[in-house]
Length: 140
Length: 140
Length: 140
Image (cartoon, rainbow over all chains, first blue to last red; front, side, top):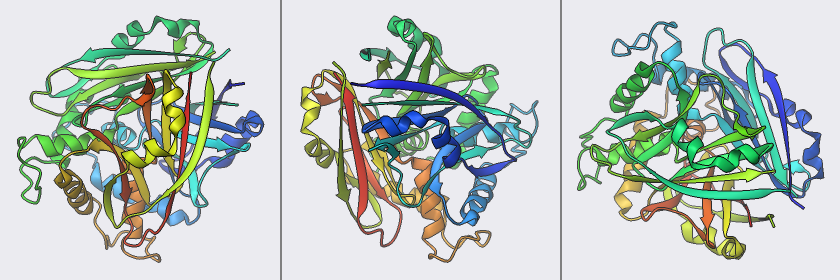
């Protein structure tokens, strides 16, 4: 029979890309009771985001920060939303480019991630502080 | 017991980014019967998109339009798909960068959006006309 | 009553964007027993991705490859993750820009895609080889 579980957790980190796969798995032990299902992780913010990418070499996460800073530069003279600091408007754009949630299938009690896939928490502000995540799991 | 509801609505707007959170909530009153669940909003088009971002200052939405126009410029001489106008191929690219759906957790009868999160309908064509959305809600 | 089905399939293709809508529909005949539901397609990799876009003119998919190669160029001297080849780090970035899953509503036994929407498998490596997809369908 289909069931659904929900849990809120907090994460934080300096500006950049952080692996949080372990934290997500710990937060919802109900995952291991599910044969076929889905896990959604949602971030309740507009200047931080979530994505899936390589879980091994940390330079991948460093190069993400490099590329996004170059492609969505601060101090764009055409921007009008500048009151909250030079890092704010680029943070909003990066958040929508990467997305505010990830959705991972559950198979036989585990997240069906590929060998190299990890969950990235992407902090786009200089001082983002604590960020709220809502994790929802459903299946049978 | 898990249940699921589906509803179609139409939206339209000039080229740019538009807040539609209220319209989505009105379309599915069944949300308030759900304790834990998910709401997906899906756009049935390839030159308009959906994302979540700041719901307060309208200059955020203006700066989105500015940045996307600069980053996915019209009249790219390398493009081959040009028969439907200069705004068409950039619209397809913007749609895939932002995504064709948003997924929001439902908690205690309401969308579990963060304080500053709103649903953006992103119209990337000059004359997009009416756009079809499919809203699906499930949970218990 | 809500039910859920899951299926794994493999896809492959040369670097670029490929339509796989038919393959997805064939893999899960259970879709036609569902009145209201959702189909998620998930790719278990970090250098290939999935998106929805135009299913008609193949030059759209060619222009996608052109724009992404220009916007996420190889041989960026600032990148540190370069051991796996010049196409590797750009592939990781493209994968997160486009996303690792698509979610499509199911209505009356069919995927509720718009007239022009198709599912793209996006291969960002020069020699990506076989890629694993997990398809999950739920609804009633």
